[in-house]
Image (cartoon, rainbow, N blue to C red; front, side):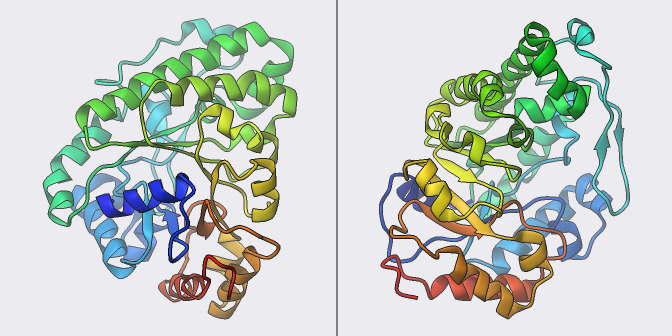
Length: 349
């Protein structure tokens, strides 16, 4: 990400109304390899292939912001691998991390990973170190530390159903589990910042927080995310949750979140009301059914429809409700950009 792009995000997060509403997309392995014409496995295992895919996207769509920017990742396997999860790899599908404990009684058998040595974490860092000269030669820097959130990681290590049940039936062990993962994440984010001092933002991705009720959100989401974000003096704290985001929306500011990528099923108006317009919303057209599967006209219509009912277009980055979906075409992305460019911050379409 260019420093100028990060400054645009920062101005929007701080509530400044710009001449144009910025656009952005979270891009990673579900979209980039096939769009670039390479296998998913090559994307993960070939640093040059990974770099060229990201470079091509940036140069094809220079007017938008890709977050987090040159994301060094291995799908959902990145953090679970540090705990010892078995990872399965496929030629053209996302990798999968197997669970490693059967119930919460086994939490005490888990050790807190060493973020400098364990699992795929050293590979994440080394890829960025190897490619940093090429990234910086394009005028970009590494601006975000990135990690899956604590409940997301817990669901891979234990199982989603078991985690949900444990929140209700074994609160002490569940807190020990989520607390240990939270401490690991603080180590992991801190190590990324140590390796790359240009980092000024954090991106956490956690869809599991969209499956809990209000009581569980206040108990298992708010305090742990608040601890993570609060451990660092970063300027942008972004959260991705494209499951149900309404349960956590009213707590986002308390958690330390100032940039939120929600589910497309929630209207921008609804989210702005629930957050009291204190959190910048990063969305919010349907990713799969419109941005990937729709016609360019349908994409344009969805962009215009997304701002319906809004009286204030501050604290808004136009995007899709989730990450860039598989099979999103360049034509549809360009249609998105054109439609967004025709919307002024004064609501004149």
